[in-house]
Length: 268
Ligand SMILES: [Ca+2]
Ligand SMILES: [Ca+2]
Ligand SMILES: [Ca+2]
Image (cartoon, rainbow, N blue to C red):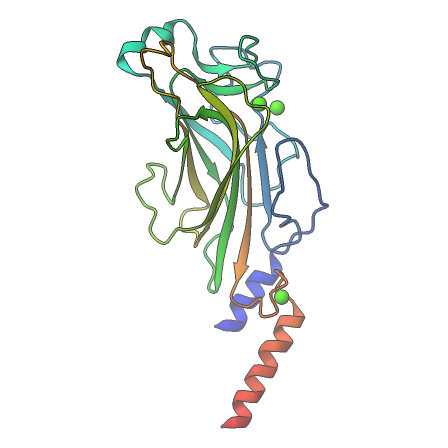
């Protein structure tokens, strides 16, 4: 049993050249790892025009170019919540796809969001469940959100599209940094990076990213904005058979396994 799993893991090693670009900041450098995949969305193509935006599902449109031997990753759902008193903003085109908005003091272009809480859902195919193998997913989003002290974002991972089944999905880490290109008093730019560990049940993982705007009040009658400018997602497989911890299952690990087996046999 152990040997068959070892072989399955070994067969899936991918070699890819290193890269770094744009908001793909401090990437996990998993290119040499088993079942590595990468996908980026910058939501910026000439044909993306507000308010229609691109058709869904939207495959990765950013750089670096996607690498995924398990299927095409996609943005599958977009939505926003606008408070009842600001529903008229929808007709004004202040929520949805925004190729470029000059009145916002930002160099960033091509994003989804506006003057409502903003949600994006992605599906990222990954390695199927293997004995002794779990997957890690690294997700990074760059966004404009509230700065009133409340959490400006939420990250959720699930096995199914309804986001109901998150059994066994472990949050390894979530870190948020404030970007110094911030402008305005009702929001700022952030970059949040999260890592989840999971055993694949359904050809990949569903990820829902939410960004929250500053709530409207008497002083800020228009309220703030929530905008997602870029999303990057990497995956890899981790294995209990990577005995020397170098992120690759190969003959070196098999040698360690063999020596352990021999020593245990000798004791008996
Ligand atoms: Ca693009
Ligand atoms: Ca963008
Ligand atoms: Ca190893």
